[in-house]
Length: 374
Ligand code: NAD
Image 1: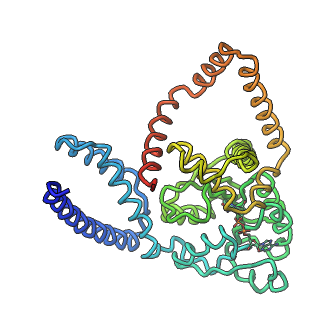
Image 2: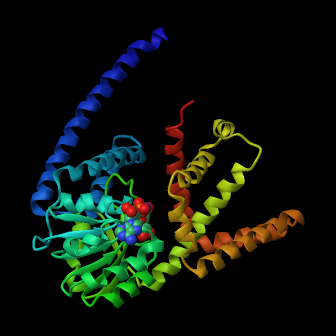
């Protein structure tokens, strides 16, 4: 090791210089955060981010440094910065709002949004499972009522709110399904109605780049402010019709959660040890295990609700079983030609996205490999 020592010392010195530069950059970003807070600017500015990355990539290339390396580093540094931006709080987009009541506000998702509304200067109150006797008092001066209870309790909870709602209130929900809750809210409430579906779990470190799906109910002009508030936090809002939302969620949520559950169930019954599989895994297998294992670290009731939420989900899951059987036939019958033909058909279906997915997954796999420890 002796001949390497002087070079290693130099590398340590450069790393320390990098640390110093990083500290300087993070404190500049903290100042940017304060200015954004004062002026009510969103945490995530996509154009600025894209321009900055393109410029650094070009500069890196001129210096003979890999542009991908610089982009990776900067993206990781920016993620750190986004995670710190809530520390300054956020501008109150609608100071006229006296109170936001979150029904189920002590739950995982309700808790997260409650914290962000408070960080944005709103008074937030929870209406929990055992608070209904005091519902009149809690809801009396509310301007916004948010329903975020387990899916199976959502419709009855919306109904239960009816006697407490006034026309000037905004009623909204965060349920992972949208058609029935939006219909029910429109039925029980004459004022503004909005259905939202946050496409993330309660453990996010920042709202930056997180997607919130929006299903308009009634009087959209009365709730633009709340969407703007979420955009200030860094979220992106995507509007869709509730039925169209639910159709797509059958694939994005129900089918995927079912397949992950079935994979976990199958694996847990096999004569293999998880520690052995991990020790021998390639980066892609490790990622796959992480995605399966992650499901089982969460609430089984939520996933049962999502999978069981409508008969269409079961019909699509049933067709997955059929695809498994058809796929198995190729191998049982040694039908190599049939397999390659079906393979080509799927490849055509993915079209140009295949290339995009290849690139994205390569980055994920490299990261998974970086974090591996022996
Ligand atoms: P959770 O179980 O953590 O929280 C639900 C809360 O509602 C609990 O505090 C519970 O006591 C309360 N509650 C139950 N019945 C109630 C009632 N009748 N009145 C008042 N409070 C009642 O669940 P969660 O994960 O926060 O999910 C809540 C909603 O958010 C669900 O509709 C779910 O579809 C949606 N959602 C969840 C996630 C997620 O990843 N957790 C993501 C997107 C959307």
